[in-house]
Amino acid sequence: MMDAMPLPRNSARLSRIDIRALPSHVRAVLGGIDEVLVYDLAMNVRFRRVTSRDGLLLHGESGWAEAAPFWDYDPAESSTWLEGAIDAASSPGPRLHRDAVPVNVTIPVVSAESARDRVIRSRGCATAKVKVADPGARLEDDAERVRAVARALAETVGDEGRVRVDANAAWTADEAIAAIELLDEAAEAVGGLQYVEQPCASVEELARVRRAVRAPIAADESIRRASDPVAVARAGAADVAVIKIAPLGGIRRALRIGEETGLRLVVSSALESSIGLQVAVRAAASIPGEVLACGLATASFLASDVVAEPVRVEAGSLPLRELEPDLRLLASPVDEALRARWIDRLDAMAVHLGERR
Ligand SMILES: O=C(O)CCC(=O)c1ccccc1C(=O)O
Ligand SMILES: [Mg+2]
Image 1 (cartoon, rainbow, N blue to C red):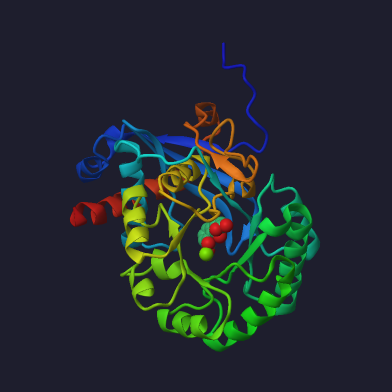
Image 2 (image 1 turned 180 degrees about the vertical axis):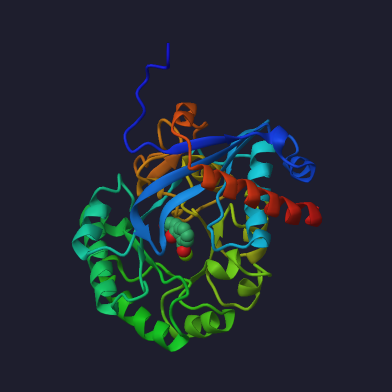
């Protein structure tokens, strides 16, 4: 008889890649990886230009991990995501210092009313990160959204409420200085902005903005997409380092970079499935001492997930869990063209990784 368990609604798609059929240079890079899957998930919100997520899930001696570089990352840049996933699936995990990690609720570019709603339904997050400066968005709408979020937090968690914003490098230095002044004021109900993430693209602009505004500055793209991820810290251009585990090459490499910056750390997601999020939770749980709320509460942006029970915020934190993909999803395979694209991409990433080793 066929498996009688019904598939979840809005089902994710999942397919297997036969490792034995891969070229030897790819198999050499994969090392002890004994399972490679391709997933394809819809998102239920537009996040910048991203409306769906697809990627690879890898299994090895230490469990499951994920490599899901966005399609605008070239093979060289993407190869660090693969490196990190192979490392996480193959190496013993880090020493853990806590069994749950505080997280921020992430507020996409939505109406003020919907933003308020998201804070209230955040399952106890005292910190909110508000996306601002989306292409085509108006600063006044950003300010209104920040104000709604700050007020909702002040009402629900009082003094513990924190609001940070993320501009994804959209502003010039002059635009940033003016916008931050306005948004800092909009966050008045929680005492102003906790920090502004990546207001401008370059380290020089960040440094200039940091000198000109009250709010602290966090670096994200300046770390995650830079040839020298520590340069922004050396230049005195940031107060906080946003650490994305997958693009920075996995738990150990990412945390080493974080430590080298000497800045306060926030571990944040790259919109991974629950498998990748759980690797990032493990990384955040291994940071000794205080951690700021991490940007890992993004599973709710996925319309479906690759595990039977997606990671879920509890009392403002994500608990540590061991997760594995729901293999029943193999009954709804990804498009063959997408699977072929990932096989090609795996090859291209492996070439870069092989050369670096
Ligand atoms: O940090 C968060 O709260 C959520 C993650 C997030 O914002 C993000 C997710 C995918 C790609 C880029 C970013 C970003 O921080 O810019
Ligand atoms: Mg960011």
